[in-house]
Amino acid sequence: MSGSYDETAGADDTMDSFWEVGNYKRAVKRFDDGHRLCNDLMGCLQERAKIEKAYGDQLTAWSKRWRQLIEKGPQYGSVERAWLAVMTEADKVSELHQDVKNNLTNDDVEKVKNWQKEAYHKQMIGGFKEAKEAEEGFKKAQKPWAKKLKEMETAKKGYHMACKEEKLAAAREANGKTEASVTPDQQKKLHEKVDKCKQDAQKAKEKYEKSLEELNKCTPQYMECMEQVFDQCQQHEVKRLTFLKEALLDIKRHLNLTENQSYSTIYRELERTVLGANTQEDLKWFSNNHGPGMHMNWPAFEEYNPDQASAPPKKKKPDGAPPTPSTDHVAPPGDRSSVSSYDKNQAYSTEWSDDEQPATNSGNENGGNGNSFEDDASTGKGVRVRALYDYEGQEQDELTFKAGDELTKTEDEDEQGWCRGRMDSGREGLYPANYVEPI
Image (cartoon, rainbow, N blue to C red; front, side, top):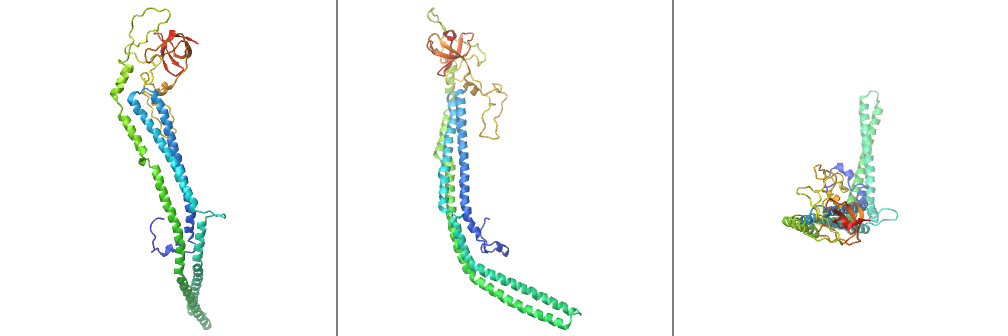
């Protein structure tokens, strides 16, 4: 119970008082409780450490997955870098939470364990040395007073019994005076009985008062001895409470990432990267790589060369034709032009959330059939072919190879004579269909 000690507690509380015989056991039990509380604190910290580790692992897995999707998705330029900076933030925060886990288990738990070992000494027969010493001290201090208390309780009981007998005798005498059947001799005996009971009650009273006086005389000594033993228990408890306070402050310091300079740096860097996103530069880059700013090999007259096959003209879509994944060019690294906006109904793992589910979007451009980030990541199957001639790619989305090189054809020849393929290095692009042959 909390609150200050009330020295004016009424008689109803005395039966639960520390001064009652045997009630010192609660002070002794505090040693056992202190040892158990150390175990509880270590268990508490170990559970928190597991939570910190799991959160860090989930952040890392989330960052890795989305970094891959973003890098292969349609976003480009400085905004892509800003988006990826969020993944970097997750990686760095994950490291900090792993540090929290390490600090809790390696520092805080070990500190509590070592203090517990030094503060509580187990006995071969069970229990702790400190508890046994306290109990023996209390017993020794309480024994003389407990003996006097027992004598006083016996005297009090005898006095009360004598008073009861006196009242019964007086009642019989009074009844005898009103009843005609009671002879004078009988009334005399009843009167003598009353006198005797009064004498016995008086003697019992004197004995009771004397035993109470003796008990009160030894009470100050009893209280002094009990308080000395109790103070020794308090000194041990002061050490425990002081240590616990210091340990909790260390735990708070390890948990409070806002006091970690690295934590603040992470978000300053993230903010700087996001603010560094430049719309005009991104638009210019897109124009130069996928718009009017691109280089064009305009048709020019060429003499016939029988020793080298000519490359077919590059395929051009008529104005206004929508892009189709099966025929449009695959963009070089950094190019996202042929990928539609991603489907938010993707089936990604939600292992870090028991109840939150990704929101669906039935109106997305993919018709709810998947995530375009993940579509770009897929390589698909193809047909192995061998180059018949050397070919030097004229644009960024064309492959370059030597005669005899092998590659994988991922899409069949279009009406303009171009195929899409993938080199063994992983690079994808267009090449003239008549420069290769099936293996």
